[in-house]
Length: 189
Image (tube, rainbow, N blue to C red; front, side):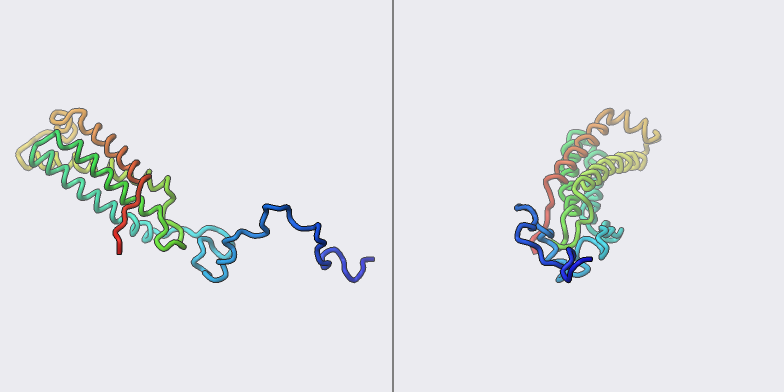
């Protein structure tokens, strides 16, 4: 028979404290009550999913940089017919895409979780940069068709540019990975 103060209801003895250096609760738990639903997890502790609209909103600057890179590469490679500037354009375009895609790996307000983890933002930036080079190659071929070209895209691109296009893709991917790891770039408001 247990007495009026059984083990569950008796106050702890001074020697029953947790070991030094360990906290009973995480320091951030004190903010959970004040912030309510803005905490990066649901009420049951499971992480919230990022919506597609939030993800696309975070990647809009990088997508705009992709389109600008494609246009610049088509102008340099197709309209100006200058091959030497293509590597430079691909490098700067990839860096811009990466620096702007890194914004998706940062919390928009300091409380909400970022749209993407940093590693995934790097992979998305590299994908967008390589996509920009591929889009520019197709755009350059289409411009060549407007000037009276008759070759299919692969034959035209290999004949005119050779291994330059794979080199552009590698350079754009490397600079995008650098940019996504070093970024983000944000304007001051």
